[in-house]
Length: 583
Image 1 (cartoon, rainbow, N blue to C red):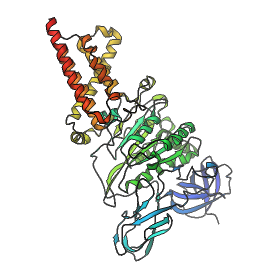
Image 2 (cartoon, one colour):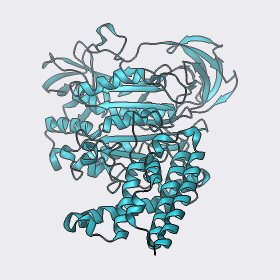
Image 3 (cartoon, one colour):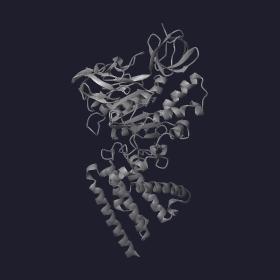
Image 4 (tube, rainbow, N blue to C red):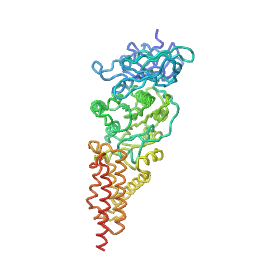
């Protein structure tokens, strides 16, 4: 007998008259196809649920069956390299590559297992009890976070299905509990940790404008807002390829099908620069395009962050790319409208802020239950209509992130990559990461960063003046400021994603380039004060070499930056002598 029957349905939302007790966030199965849903409201005589699959064909009178469990996904080895929908159901390798209604999560797989505990050992929640041979990354078999006790039996090394019992633990209550390779976890509940750790090192992205000016710490949160055509997806793909994370979780949430198809086609062909293997080997792609059920789009974000926490608990550093949180917020808005809730600004529900907070606050650098360290860094793309950063999703996101990388349409249209506007962006992780940069050989990193931003601010102010009076009417010192700012823009902030030399820039090369640029600024300022003509400074051949240094000096030739600095000294010395003779 059904626990409830459908009385009303509108798109992904239904009401049902219940004959059994339901609870909030309980997973339910609806209709003959057992479509997966979740209870979002409990009323006196019934429930309201959102359905994560296509509800075409459902009608009043169809059954609703309770599961007694919250909406969960099964976390297990073998997920790396997979492509899934928002409910962690495989999108590749299926007949016709389609998800059928009522289909459950990934079928069981076999993998090699090697135990690291023995019979009689005491085990605690989250402890590593074995390792799996699943490919490039050695995945760990974890005790479920709520289980501890004494090992009664442990499987011998060998190949097992992920649903087979590998270990039996006698809990404190005396009950013998079987443990398999995987376990289920509610997607809306953060996984427990021993404690959160203060940020100490950056997530190195290889993009100079991010690492040098607006760094993000491991375990921190960053937003990547930008209007249509500003390069959000391309930049996130570059970050996924080059950032120094162990695992990449890429969530395509509500994006257009052609963009997601490009990601799905490109990721399997990308080479991982860390290992030389396919990048997909350490990546999980969750694809939930705009034509998929809207409620599943809302769930995909939680599926992605739960997966990220699972790998974090194995002592790995994880980067989660969410593209885009605006489409996720639009799913919230649609469901809220069907529920008849009072809309807030731009029609978004009043709880938009709290939902964004729930998501972003799950990023952390932690000490895991297994006493190791791991991190989840969230990079969420935002797609504000017409590039309006004052709209609710962008403005609310700024409250919960520590890095804000604002993409600018004008820079994107000028083919400037990354199109991050340096005067609209910020990072709150700078102070925490200064010590790390000092250890990398740049003790003055904070001061250098501040000088670069000041120079760019002066440029913006002087360009407004130049539009009124003309650039030639400005004093030589101000014209030199514009010249130096242009050098910073072209040599430091611009970076080609297609250049084999410059698509990735290590912290050491970033430091060397930054020091060379600031050396030029100092020399040019003193030379101008000594009477050198600005035109002579602008005509220096070494200036052109400095502009091209990021493209011409590779990672294994960093000593050439010192040679460039010595040539700067020689050329400026020659200019000063020529100026003295002229006077």
